Image (cartoon, rainbow, N blue to C red; front, side, top):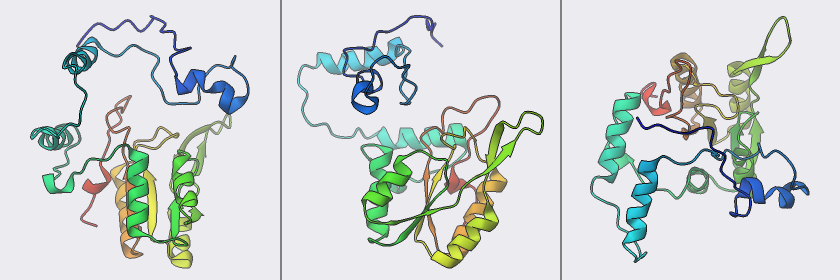
Length: 231
């Protein structure tokens, strides 16, 4: 554990930051508070800077091979943190989660095939299928609201609506956000197992984007979708 100064303001303007320097391009104004990109404004920890500096100090930036310990380290982390034993042949390198979703869509489906998303959800879940000529199918999450103030407190999956959609449209894929972005939900074992059951029964493949797996807060626990049932 290192001491981090979370009060230090880092000036991002002029650093080609998408979040700050991209405001004008996307919104036509530069003087906005940039809350639109999941991008960190705190300094990276010293150990990260030192590790990068070691690479910089090699002075030659050619092609790299993947170290032998790369995948075993990831597998050990998944088991230690999330209780899921991933076998090494299951693991593969991808240059980003959205690219990975694109690979799966292009491998397992063809243009015109249906792909289910659960809005409100991370926009690339909608952009990637549609720009690859797939048919977008929506199974919106159900809002759970505060009885007194009417604010949305959380979301639940609409399993009945989903099952009807899968029966009528016969899609090939469903894209799951687990934990859910932007809802901030670490889906429960019960919810994920029920989703697995429905999708298995209807022959639908689930892509589970788990990029926020290592950030649960307030006692929440992340469950890898692949770990919740044999289905």
